[in-house]
Length: 297
Image (cartoon, rainbow, N blue to C red; front, side, top):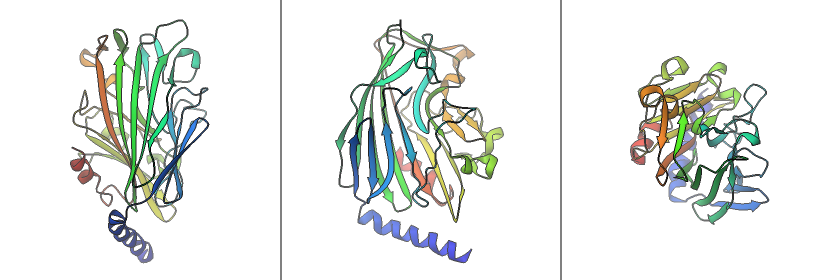
């Protein structure tokens, strides 16, 4: 145990040096993926295949173990794809769950805006499409990937949704920015899910508004996790969270609409949604997630 504490302390110290000697972050587009490496080590891929429901990131590798802190689908929840963005119940379409005929978010222009140096910037333009229906939404997304320290990876997501018609979203728990955790990090397997107020677990976090949520667990000799921070400028901030002890969490305003009915957005309106994803080593306190949120403001 003393050796593990010493190793983690060393990595934190290394992180201080790392901030001065920034990591070199690279990206390469290979077919329908953009692969990102940090100091030569594979971190993540932005996947935008034509046969997928929507674009997503997978894997999302932790800074300690090198293994993904997220997971990709299973028999019970095949619509959970790692780190992703989508929405169900949009003008009768489903841009979240399996079944491409029900609706898809199609990437039409994924590209690398910047790579090398201390950051990678990925942009994409997407159209929300369903057979036999007019597209209700198009979006522009920009992801900026950095490595603030040796024990943290950061993805800043900026998503602009343009309404191509009047949009109505029925009450749904399937909406917007979401993470499906790797099974070994879930609360069911000994992990911890905690919000800004210190509430933990599904029972005490479900439906509660919070500016951020962190989910982490033990992996071998280390603790690793991933946090989602909502930017204070976001519509519906701070959104209530849909949480599950089996390893899912999402700030999901559409499950708690005003009047408990539907969410409406008029044609021509735009929604700007910003999130910060922190992939970290250590506990929530050790990773200083609360302090990281204060910097995000």
